[in-house]
Amino acid sequence: MAIIEFTDEYFMREALKEAVLAFEDNEVPIGAVIVANGRVIAKAHNLTERLNDVTAHAEMQAFTAAANYLGGKYLMDCCLYVTIEPCTMCAGASYWTQIGRIVYGAKDEKKGFSLIPSTILHPKTTIVGGIMEKECSELMQRFFKNKR
Image 1: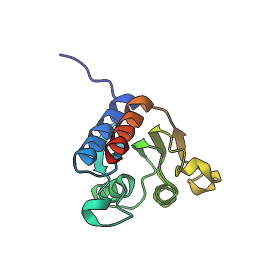
Image 2: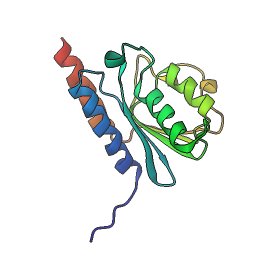
Image 3: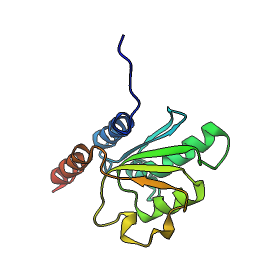
Image 4: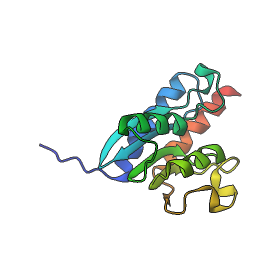
């Protein structure tokens, strides 16, 4: 029997599955999962079109699901895996959740949180970028190419 190694790549693949669901629903293909104690406790993807809600980003949906799962609004011992670097809105929301770690796939050169001062993130949040960057960015490129 194979032993599954729970790496950043493993959980990013789970987030990428969510991004594919968004792609198939004609949503901007961003997916997110939140992990606590090596276990996925929330899965989400963009729902802005379906809900007609500009705040229905994958990260926001995942924060809500994780808080509901845990029964509390703070996610200090959790890690957010998201296919694209969070925007400033999602980064600001992550501040209030006090999430312990954010791992993203591809940078968002136009709207990513790294374009503004780092004070938008909680000071205890650690960041890792570039996990499965190629796969994450290719899905976004394919989506927008189909839109043109």
